[in-house]
Image (cartoon, rainbow, N blue to C red; front, side):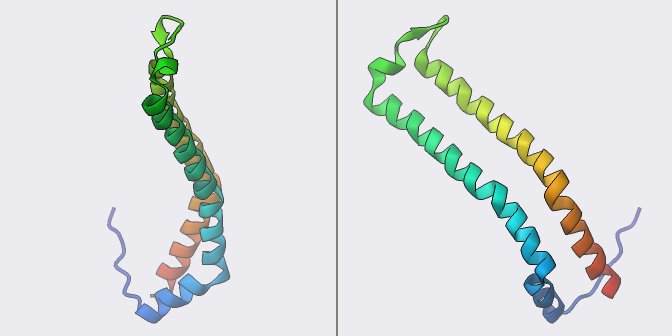
Length: 109
């Protein structure tokens, strides 16, 4: 399957970027990514600060491992969970809007 070659002017790209449709796409993206990024950074910072300044708390045994190991594993689990949630959110809220903008722009050529 070949991809159509579309030649758009810089003005057409700027007009698309300024459109209400594109701004709605940006808001949809930011609505998820900004709060989740801040929350994950705070969670990561908690982990690092706790490991640095309270090693005795991280060394406490818990369910066969220590608290630090469990929190480290939770960091990975959180990363995978966020990725899973983002893919679902993007498929529902971002990709349809991006596809509509792309189709409109390709139809202009």
